[in-house]
Image 1 (cartoon, rainbow, N blue to C red):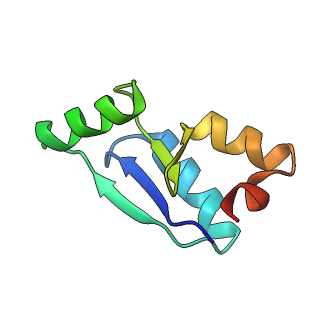
Image 2: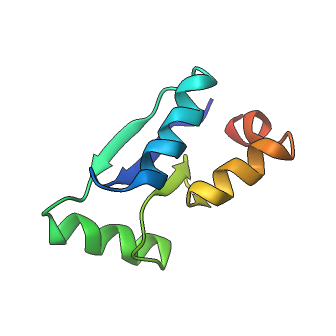
Amino acid sequence: MKDVIIYTTKTCPFCYKAKRLLKGLDITYQEISVDFNSKLRAEMASMAGKTSVPQIWFGEDHVGGCDDLHELHAAGNLLEALN
């Protein structure tokens, strides 16, 4: 299974929604908070091409944000994308 990395902030409701889905599916993830860390936020933005959070990766594959994660799950492709 690929490693899951999610960039978040403490005040983002979409970050909590994405993490709730992952936890509900018993998927472990590494959370990287970009709160008050402009270097990490710039790193995330450079890799994702976006500054919004959450930004989610499965291994080297950029999934996108919360809506993208939920769409992947609704289509029945989330667990397949992790393998």
